[in-house]
Length: 271
Image (tube, rainbow, N blue to C red; front, side, top):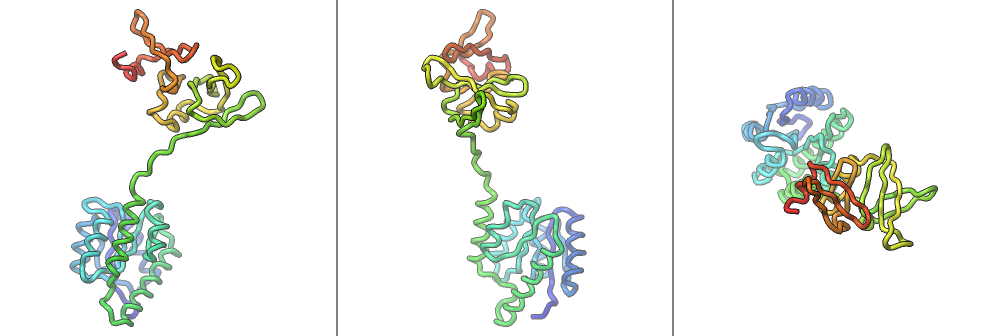
C-alpha cells in the first residue's frame, strides 16, 4: 500500500479536531480525513461507514470513551490502526511504548505527530507487503494495551506521611508519625509534640516550618484528627475526652488539655 490512506478523527473538542485535521494535512498530505466524530458512538459509526486505515482516538470522550471504542474495535475482524490522543500523561508513556502502539500527548507537537504518521505509514506498508488484512491488529496485542491503560487509569492509593522532619534548636530530627502526640499551629510554624525519650511522662517539642492546612492532607485521617483550626491530634494517644458543664469538649493527652472546636465535636459523637 502507498502513502494514500483514510482516517477518522475522534475528539470531543471541536477546536482540537480542527487543529489535528490541519496538522495532518501538513505532515501527511495524502491522508484523507473521511470523518470527524465528537464522541465514541459517533466514532464507531464513522469507522463502520468509512472503514479507515487509521483512527486518531481521544481517550476521554462522552457517550463512549476512547477505551470503549478500542475494545469494540478489537472484536472486529478488521481493525484500523489506532493512534490514541490524550492530555493525561499517566495514560500514555509506559503502556503505549511497551506495546509499540502510537499515542499523542496534548497539546500536540507537529514533530511527534509526524513521527506517529511515519509509524502508521510503515505499518500499513508492512501489512500490504504481507498481503494481510488491511490495518489488522493482533487482538491480543490491542487487548493487552487496553488492560494496561485501564490499570494505569485506576485511582492510585493515597500515600500518607510515615515520617516528618522537624527541628529542635540547631538540630533536625526524623520523627515517626506514630510517635507524635499532636501538632499545634503557632504563627508561621507548627509545634510537634512527642513523648520524651528522656522522661517517659514528659514531652519533647519540635518545630516544622509549614502550614497546618498543608499538613493535614498528608496525614492518615484514620490516625490523625483535626480537633481545632490550630490542632491535629494522634487519635491513638488520646487518654480521654472531657466535657464541661457547657457541653464543650477537651481532649486529654497526658498532661496536655486541648480544646475541641464546635465544628469538630462530631468526631466524638456519643461522648
